[in-house]
Length: 205
Image (tube, rainbow, N blue to C red; front, side, top):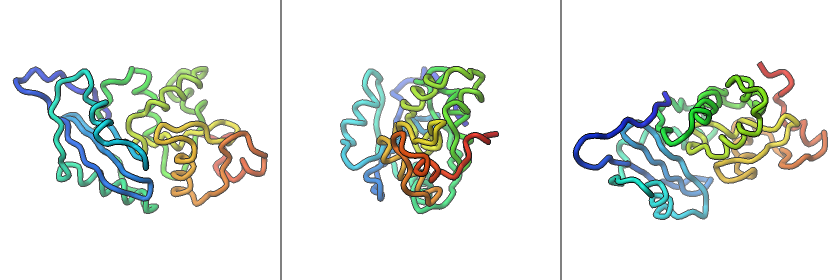
């Protein structure tokens, strides 16, 4: 369930819990507030300290390393990277996003494992059929890649498009994990290359 973060009027500072762990995709940093998961960041070349500083910039909060409360998230992500289908049914804290951004994530969160949809399909589902570009911009700011699977949204021509979780190469890797497909087109590519994506975007429903 995606919910805004409630106003904390209690005495004392709100707590942000985090955990780090290693994977085939590099180091992960997962951050949560009292309302739910707030951020998933991963890659081989990012600073945990700098990312935590960015997450708390402009807000008063206590940041606490807490593997215990985040262990199920860690286990789910590692299972996913192993090709399994865990349920990412965690509450999410996306209060910093716009209403439009939240509506995009709500739709994208329900795209099934191993299935690709287009930016146009997402725009249609949120009731803004001409907002393909704003949908792409919203997904470029997805704070919870993998948990909210924006890598399953591609261009209508069968090419991949960008990815908030580390660029198109990382997006291609995640699609490979889910589908076993290789040779996916980052750019326009040839028709033969694009057909490596065996999910018919013209039959989206």
